[in-house]
Length: 192
Figure (spheres, rainbow, N blue to C red):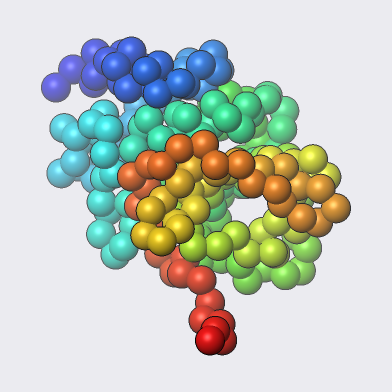
């Protein structure tokens, strides 16, 4: 398979029609070899616009959804970014290619770090979650941006938001087929 041609086709046939217009995002997605971040058995499908399963509940977000999310987040060189993911470093590699200083953590660790930790200009949740834990929001600088997929009534929706006074206002972009992060279910709560 000609992966370079497949990458160009991904840009022209998936990303641009879905509203991915950020030049830095398009350049990164055109240069980072997605096939290097998928299991060997899935290399032929690396540029299909669908999730790629890794096993153990882990999966990679489809290219158009990821490109749209990154375009909406508008990453800028020199910013500090946190990628909360499920094992593929593709999203982190894209942000590095754009010029960000990137830290990656497993999705299981996203809601348990209540010590404050480092703060970031941008947080990318690389998968669908039922809720965004407050300890994750607390890791954003004032005005920092967060993006991911929020699962509502079984439908995953791409969302982006900005931090202000310890809160996060979210805006829905579009429904998308985004795989769930392992262990990303909302904690049980009492309801009538």
